[in-house]
Amino acid sequence: MIPKTDLDYIEQIQAGNVHAYAMLVSRYKNMVFTLAFRLIKNKEDAEEVAQDSFIKAYRALGSFKGSSKFSTWLYRIVYNTSLDYLKKRTRVVLSTHIDEVNEADIGKMQDAMSYLEAEEKKQTIEKALAKLPEDERVLLTLFYFEELSLKEVAEIVGVSYENVKIKLHRSRKKLYHILKNVVEPIYLNHGSKR
Amino acid sequence: MEAKDEKLNAFTKEIIQDAGLQVPSEDFLKHVMAEVSKEKVTKKVYKPLISKVGWMLIGSLFVVFTYVLTRFSLGFSFFGNWNLTSLWVEKYKITFSIPTTYAYSFAFLLVFVIIQVYLFSKRFSKSLDR
Image 1 (cartoon, rainbow over the protein chains, first blue to last red):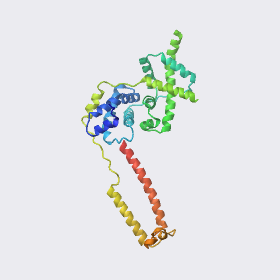
Image 2 (cartoon, chains in turn yellow, cyan):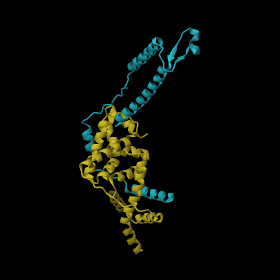
Image 3 (cartoon, chains in turn green, brown):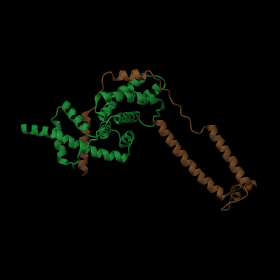
Image 4 (cartoon, rainbow over the protein chains, first blue to last red):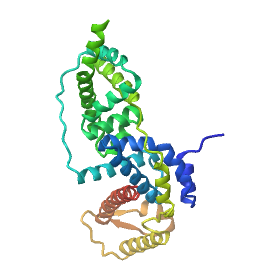
């Protein structure tokens, strides 16, 4: 059986079948929640924002024309809803000093990361991501996890293609330096034991 | 320089993939569906800005306007007239001329209308897509 596309479900919803929306929520809930969480950094609030985003998307489905992918359209709603939420809260501007990255160091870092257990690795990366500015966390997730094109990412976050490219370049370096500070002591520890 | 960027790019991808996705609570779907079940989605039918009748009216007015201007004009023109008689109407014994001022004004008007229609349709489709 051919799996149904997002558009198939949308047509069913527009024809009055509310239950078809459950399929779309199930398909995107993890990504939507992750985007909200990476912006808001609090699980309870992120869950509320993610639910709000799905409800907003449902209300707007009547005007969804399909000129862009449903996922891109949905992520834009999540991004804007999360930003609206953050506006109500005091935003903390994070800054990380960006040094040049040494090619040989990247190999060492990969080596060091391999010492970590899967869950420990996940937590370490999540902590490192939390030290990046909100928009950069989202850019990295959309581009490297969801593997969206630069054009699609630009459409979601509402900035230019060139701007996304520059921000991604910067956030890659920042993430590397943050991870280096966290992982290097672990690597040195393991190295001395060998 | 490029090799280093490539390496950092691959490393970042690996890291972000390893981080995976966060999972919301088990009740997430239930909460969303409970909310949306109270509402009904109705598909919006898009109406064109100018209806077929509207276009026909504009077209008819344009034909009448052009006919009146060319047929009953006093012959005033900054640049002289374009005499089309010799081109293709001669055999029907109809004399037909368009003042050049009118032709240029019409050409400019047409360009502006085309640009505006394009800009308006882009703006409207963007606002409706949100």
